[in-house]
Length: 210
Image 1: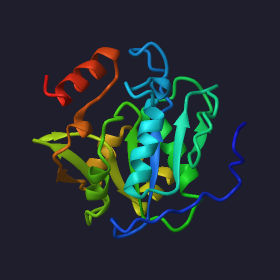
Image 2: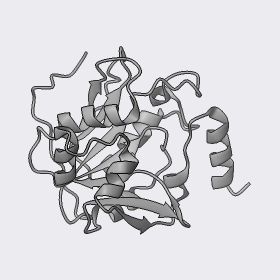
Image 3: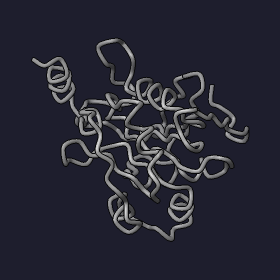
């Protein structure tokens, strides 16, 4: 059953973080390289990528947490996760971002948002906390000099994206225009893009040190 989006989203605070923050999972892609939407792809422990991303945002203290889903997709019924089906097929990442942020901005109280693509299910909660606790309009995690995900955006940046003042056309342009800062983390998950089954297998082998 679809959730009623007129109902208020719940805020969640964490003692680890200096201010309340929201979570947005970008899971609206068709997953052509995977062979289907990556939201429903599974890790070896049986969790879907969507469940894993929700879990790490929750553990980091995010609230509310919402996820964009592919056009025509069904709500998976994950307790505590609000879902938003994209209004049309083939939307690009920035369109999905704008759609999700427009929903989030309706909820007062949070000051930042961690934006996590669903194909990064191996991120650690501590990395998200490091981003949120950075005093900047936008923060990008880096692992040994390589940029990754999630990114963290201040509420004022979100407002400008939703209004169209920051029109992209990609998130990279937005981050550059607001002077995003790098946040070094010792977390390979931030740079592990599991966009194919082979990429996931390789990431898991590397994580085990094989």
